[in-house]
Length: 188
Image 1 (cartoon, one colour):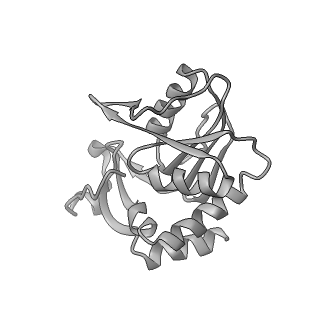
Image 2 (cartoon, one colour):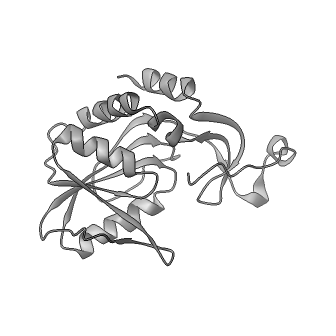
Image 3 (cartoon, one colour):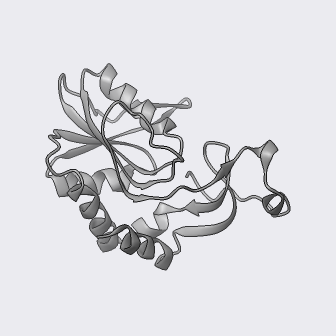
């Protein structure tokens, strides 16, 4: 699957939105990827994640971990495509933690999976969980990389779609966005 085909899938499912959005990072943007709208279609989610898994060919992975909620389906489908287990971290008192009996094994090689990366904060929190548990990071993967420059996660970073989407701080909005009400459409 090419980037153009993946973007077509996002557009067709209504997952690539245009307007004025407030991202989880607090930044504002004209475009928003609501991955849940594309991932609600199980077969399409499997195809997108299988295409992302193809980019990981040759990366030795023992398990996949993702931050909840956005990375859950991506992590699960990547684990299916890679033939390994999937665990997830979730918020507890404002911080990502492992719960439900999930654990990181000593020396276990993890792929960290996310739906969209803008600044990489949740990915970094998840990397910290793996390292604190004695695991290692084999790679990081996301359906969408919307960073302005490639983030340094200390491991290879793979994305199915790379799109440089302008972001703005609330005090530096361009005139066209300043006149449009901002929407915070989800967790992304």
